[in-house]
Length: 323
Image (tube, rainbow, N blue to C red):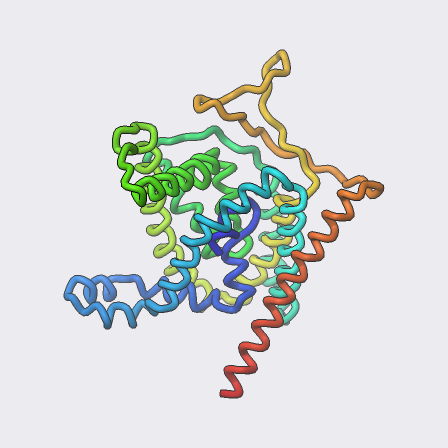
């Protein structure tokens, strides 16, 4: 889930949905409430841990943190070196997730079809929005944290892609994470020089505010989603199917990044010396190119990953029933 949340256009919630623990994830987060807080402050730590489904949440969060410092850095490398193949694999994974979610959905009606169409339209609309400029205002960073966590709680909605639209993807999911990684590495060797580095301290402060916003959004959205899943499960599933289908345009592998240029055709940089992304130009691939067919191969690999997850889910259920 951590690696998926890092990639623009891919939702960590999709991983939870396909792997079969999405509802447990949402309901566990709902337990982080006033009662849990009272158990914690009263020193009843074991009761608190059991109440919030602590084992499940701890393993999940720990795995996501590991991915941010390992898999996500690996993804950064491949996105820079083999971008087409990475997008192709994720395009295949989303195709597979559409199949996975919709194959057993048998509640199509006028209401659910309308809900699915609304999700489809919203997903397509988001795909073609233009990114904003980077903004390091701390209140805005907090709001970014609340919004970005939507990718974990809403399958199909990519929090990292929304951060691109808000202009803060590089700042929050690349620069800040790398700054924290470098800080931990320096502390391990006894180097505390970062305390005299204003730029590093500023970036770590931004990451702390972003994390606080994410935690706030995670808990608040989970309460809302618990109510929605309980009372409008079929409509919600239809919206998710439509939204995921509409978001395919976000991860269409064959696209070019359009950067802002001046009257002379030179790249325009922001205040931090980074290129300003205006949008993405999507195109149909050249079928005569071997690279295109390699990309198609990775699309198939992406679909296969989801089918394997589907197979794993079935095996796990069969094992649970036989016990």
